[in-house]
Length: 384
Image (cartoon, rainbow, N blue to C red):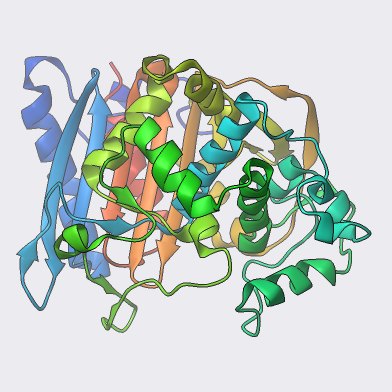
C-alpha cells in the first residue's frame, strides 16, 4: 500500500513533522515552514544562496536566503538571476507548442519535414513530438565532447545509428530536446533565440528571463558553485539555448508557474500552448511524459516523486508506451521538472487542482532528492 494516498494534507503534514498552514496566519506560518526546511537544506548541502517562491491562495510568496556571490557577499533577492538548466526544456516546449497552436508546426510531422538535411536518416523519420518526449531513439544524455559546431551537430544527427524502435524507450537527452527546439525554429524560419527572447518570453510577461544575460542585468547574475566550491557559470554548447540556456529570477519563475495554473490570463494561442505542454503523450512507469513537464496522478507519494526524479530515470533507458490519443492536461496531477548546471540547481512543481506551486532556485547543484523532498514538504503543509 502506498503511504498517505488519500489523507488530507493537514494530516500528511503532521506525518512529515510539519504544521499545517491555515487561516489568517498563512504568510507568517508559511515563512516559518519554509525557513524550517530551506535553512537546514542549505547547511547540509553547503548552498551559498537560494530563492524560493510559493504560490498559494492565488498569491505569490517569496523567501530569499544567503548570498548570490560569496566574494561580494551580495544577498539573494527577487532580482537575482539563477541558471535553471534543464528546466529550460519546459520553456522550449512552450515555444514549440505555441508554433503548433499557431499552425506553423505539426507535432506528428517527421523531423525531415523541417530539417531536409535529415532526409534518409533514422532520426529524419522521428516525429517532432517523439524528440520532445525523449522517445525518438535512445539518444545520449549529452553530445559527445568533440561535437561543438553547428556542422558537427548536424553530422552527429545524420550519422546516428538506431538503438531502439521509436516510441518504445525514453532516454532523457539534451540532443533529443535540442533538435526538438531547433525544428520549431526552422519551421518558423527564425533563429531559436530570437523566437524565445522576442516572442515567447515577452508573451508570457517574463521580463527578467534570458538566454543571454544583457549587460544591464549582469550585476544580478548569481555566481554558481560546483562540488568543489569553485565559482562556475554555464558554458555554451551545441543547442544549449534549447536544452539548458534559461536564466531567470524567482519573481519570473513564480509568474511562469502562476501561468501554468492560470493560463486563461494569456492570449488564446498561449493558452493552447500551455495545455499542449501539460498534456500526456507517453507513459513511463508512474510518470506521464508531457512536453517539458512530467506529471503524476495526485495525490502522489514522496517515494514516487523521488523515483521519477532519480538518477536512474535520467541516465538509464526507460520503457515507454505512446498514449493514443494523448491525455489532455490534468488538473488532478502533480507536475514537475528539475534542472541543473555545473553550479546551479532548480526545481519547479505545481498542482493545478490545488492552485499550488513552488520554485526552488539555488546557486549550487545539489541532489534532486533534496529538492523534491523540500518542495513536497512545503506544499504538503498547504492543502486545506
